[in-house]
Amino acid sequence: MKVAILLFDDFETLDVFGPVEILGRLKDYYQISFYSLLGGLINNSHGVSILTKNLDGLKNGGDVFLIPGGTGTRKEVNNGLFIDKIRQISQLSKFVLTVCTGSALLAKTGLLDGKNATSNKRAFNWVMTQGQNVNWIKKARWTIDGKYYTSSGVSAGMDMTLGFLKDVHGIEFAKKAAFDIEYCWNENKDVDGFYEQ
Amino acid sequence: MKVAILLFDDFETLDVFGPVEILGRLKDYYQISFYSLLGGLINNSHGVSILTKNLDGLKNGGDVFLIPGGTGTRKEVNNGLFIDKIRQISQLSKFVLTVCTGSALLAKTGLLDGKNATSNKRAFNWVMTQGQNVNWIKKARWTIDGKYYTSSGVSAGMDMTLGFLKDVHGIEFAKKAAFDIEYCWNENKDVDGFYEQ
Image 1 (spheres, each protein chain N blue to C red):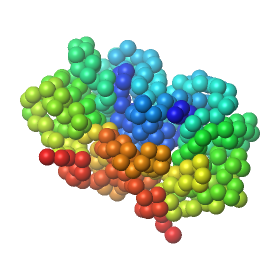
Image 2: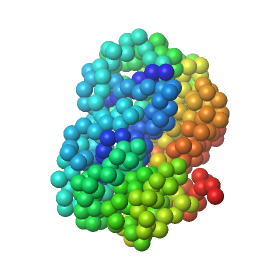
Image 3: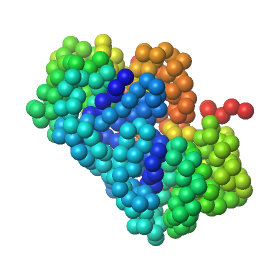
Image 4: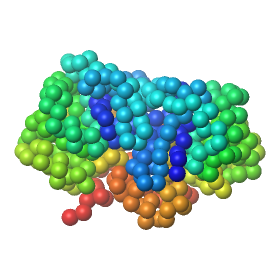
């Protein structure tokens, strides 16, 4: 499957590279590419600069479309052209995965309306304003609604990616992927130690 | 503190970006830069391309020098110039942290001789051959010996980085850093669920 990772300035580092580590190792199954609205180098505040392709190369969608979060989402939710392209690509993609505040970008497209979704705990109130018809679930390590997977904050993206592998390839495959990177996988999407009432 | 991250082709994605996520968020304390032997773009097999500075800019050492692992270490242990520079920079740095097979590169310099260190479980036998006078500890999430921190495979680098924060800033600081990224920190360096006798 082709995995298309969406980047924008001030994306969150681990939102991207947690899932990239997990899927990138599985070379017989997944091939990773990075995209941004205009292509070229994308930077974040952790000093990371990543070379990307132009999003137009993805206009027919991908097998897996991954949307990270980060402080950059605060600006990008107001970028109409960017949101339009996210809507188009998400509609045409087989699976759409968001990490952290990436769900704000997807919610803004309207595609999550009536669907279950989650996000980063500390940005939750803001994220909810980006999709008032979404069924936001605060207590969740990740959620699944049809082809849409959304995770809570940062590290939860790794747990969600392993959960996605479980759904596609089975539990033993996912467990091996976690074992191979010596990662203690939080297997149950509904157990969320970071939820506070 | 200035954090210098060493890159080389075919570095392991999460070895780098787990610690970068944790330290990069702490902008009042840590400033991240990426270096490689010749500078420029460094690539790995997960499709990641990162822009780096020339290692000569680090000849006086850094506050924190982080050496990741990855399949590229198999080649780089035989790159005498690279190993010489790692030795020089490590000697002059305040702290040296390795993740996964990054400890093979550091062991090759001789600086770990007589010291405790660990590495990735599945590459352990190979890593041991790179430093036959090192006190290799297979059952460890991470080890500390003076200024040298070494972690086991991939994800363990995040636990080690939080352990480093604990040592420098105290336990509550480290716990907050983990909480802020919704990361379930394995706090005890001697508890290692991936060790098999």
